[in-house]
Length: 293
Image 1: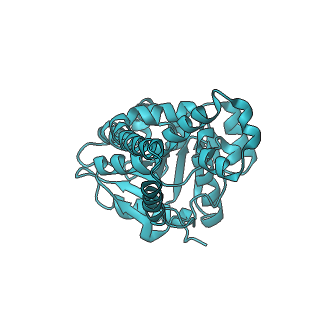
Image 2: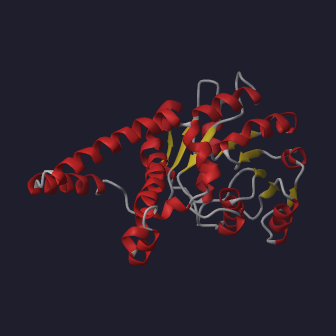
Image 3: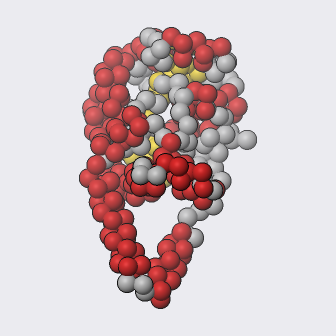
C-alpha cells in the first residue's frame, strides 16, 4: 500500500478516467486527505459525490480549489488555459498546481505564468498510465500502481515543488524510482515516440486493415486486438494531443514511414534473409520494453 499523501486537501479538476482514478487512489491510500472534484456537468459532479469519491464536488471551479493545498488539472490540454485563468485568483498562496497532460511544452509555457512567473507554483506532471476507455466509469484506484510519472520542472518552478509532487504521485502508487524529471522538449519528443506516434499508427492500422474490407474483422484474433486496442481511444482527446505535439509526432511518424518503406521493399524483392534480419532487430528492440507492473 502506498504511503499517505502529506497534502491536506486536493482539488481535482475533471472527474474522467485520470481524475476519477486519482480520487479513488487517494481514498485508498490517504483517507484523511480532503478530496475536492470539479466537473463541467452537474451529472458528473453528482456521480462523483454519490460514489464517495469526493468530500466536496461542484461545477464551480473556484469553490473547488479554494483552500486546497494541491490542484490537479485532469482535463484535455486545450481546456487548461481557460480553466486556469478562471481559478488563478482562488488558489491558495501556499498551494501547488500540477496536471496530467500528455503534452508538456504548450501546457507549461501557458500555465506557468498564470500561477506566478517568478517563481511559479505550477509544475507539469505526466503519469504514464491510462486506458483507451474514457470517463469516470473507467476510473480505478490501482491505475497508477507501479507506473512511471514524468515531471517537467523549469527554472521558474517554486522551491520544494518537485519534492511535493513526487510525494503526491508516490502516494497514488507510482513507483518512486520511476518518477523522473525531464526538460519540456525532451519530454514531448520522447513521449511522441512511445505514446503519441503509436496511437496515431494504431488509428492508421485499423483504417488500413478494415476500411476496404470491414468484414475481415470476423477473422480477428488476440494479436489484432492487442495491436489496435488504443485505436479505441477518444478521437477528440487525441486530436488535441497530436496537434499540440505535431512536430515531434511528425518526426516519429516519418521514422515509422521509413521502416515501413524498407519492409515493403524487402517483401517486394522476395528477400527472405533481409526480412529475417528486419524482424530479428525489431524483436530485440521490443525486448527492451519493461514488463507491465
